[in-house]
Length: 70
Image 1 (cartoon, rainbow, N blue to C red):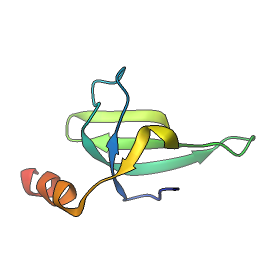
Image 2: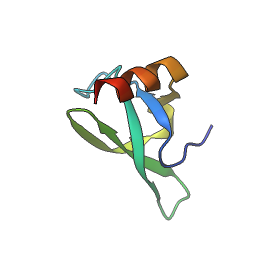
Image 3: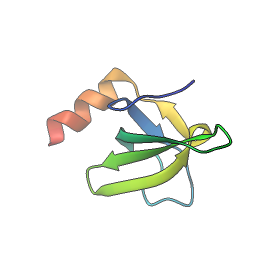
Image 4: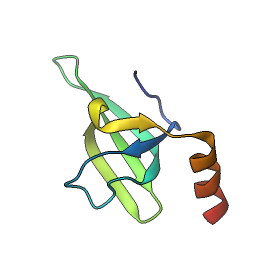
């Protein structure tokens, strides 16, 4: 599944401080080999160079809860 800017996603990367958090894709980048990586913005920062395999589409309830917190 590919993602686009403004999609809400959950990051699954045990090495990231944002592991398990819901964020918003702010940028997509495609390498010359056709691999796509993403920049995800979270309430407390951002994570760059995230591969698609580390992302899961957020439930609408997760996205709404994040927007209510802002």
